[in-house]
Image (cartoon, rainbow, N blue to C red; front, side):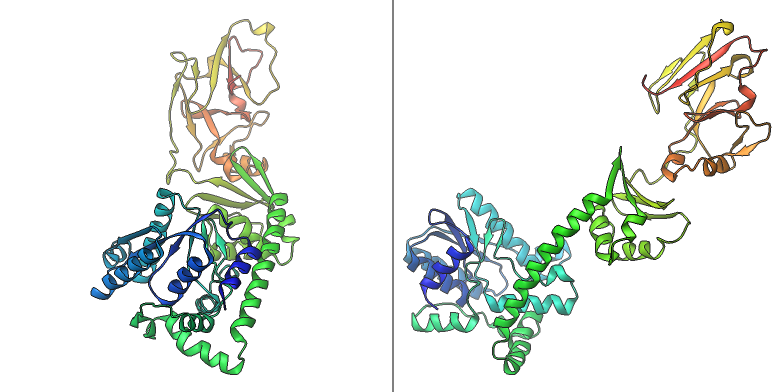
Length: 446
């Protein structure tokens, strides 16, 4: 491995240009020290940043001093910070390793922005790629965890991803690269170290080209994942339709795709649903029964051959919101728009056919009228019928969705329902030949 390999790899992968300023993340270990020496030898424009995680006492301070002297020798900018990593981990309920990762990438990005660097470069190499793959495979992270460490992720680049650990060690030896050794890297109590020092050597003894072969496999998995994701995005766009705040998925079109599991996950995970919920939904797609699923951000209703997604509302919904109407108030805009007109010239009145208008016999109404939500057990006499009917049956016959039922408002006269707003009036309040005055109620903003 030589500097020309770094230059060629960067040119082929187009990680950065010769005019870009690169901020190198240097811990002082062999990998990042070799990266810094190669960047220096290549003549690239760079600075060095270092994080002191306060995990190894005086050794951590010596690491910082070593990296600072390296930057001084190379005559490049140096930026360092110190973290109380254990305190951060405890405060956020995460492991020391996760805390260190979050802290350093946060620091890298803020330093990059403040000092106007184009990219942050980390010293990940092919052995790191193999180790990460095996860690994710052991933990069962799915395909997303098997595509490896990306060469470029936003403003973070990995310019050493052409080399294996042995080549880096040989470069350090032949070019007399000084570096710091962290003894904790040899402790196999950490999963990554166990894989590095025990598992990969065993696999390498079976196949000396294991790391190179796995790297190629990871590359192919990443490529197939990109193709698969694009196909899923196209399918999702074709399956999703919107109506106001509702997102609708046709069940028949969804189940026509095989296998349906990855498509269902691609459709529903953006709305906050987890794998267990998606799996449970798939088991009941063939059922005629209504099913409800809730995520932190959305509600999903499966009914009548479709899935309906709506933004999550309040945890509870008022069932008896009561608003006095007429004669004191003749117009309201909340919770819905209603306008009321009292009409005395009955002979000239033509009953509108629009369901958004209710024409009621004024003298049969008890004022003030009230507006409320429907409740279980509610019933009325639908226009044209002399028998009482439960609202729940009316909704079923009218093929109301759950969202439509929940959105229904009732205009009431005393304890009686005079109008299911926007749908049907009660037969008892209809206009007859004996009607002397009419109350016309219009729903909507018009």
